[in-house]
Image (cartoon, rainbow, N blue to C red; front, side, top):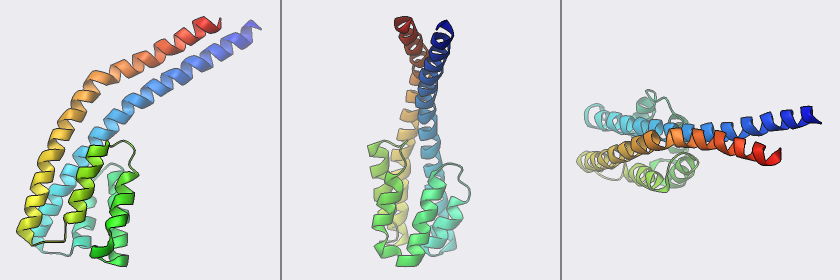
Length: 171
């Protein structure tokens, strides 16, 4: 009987610790995704200004330097752009960006509105849209970094402590 209690206690501690670690790592993933998006927009801006490629080509070239999940979401958007045309890709943008769970609602709104407005004006207008979005996302990166620094340790500690509390109550 004691052996079963010990095994269950260890399992509870491991599960609650894992939950705390997973919550803290989601903050890290959000920051990485936002940094990747800023990088992507800077690359898109340069490609549009100097290379004068079509929007799907610009997106495809620019996404190659990314390292987070946003790379695959943009890849899906590129496939849909080539398949259905740039003008009818709004639903794909909405679906693919909304599927990124780590981003806040505001992050998603900024990214979606930026991507939807690209290709709908002259190069200067698109460049201004990208510049404004980069400024907003830079602020979001700073906010994500501050949130990560202040909450990572808290989530991990709360995970372990809650597991220990459950064990004490259980025993």
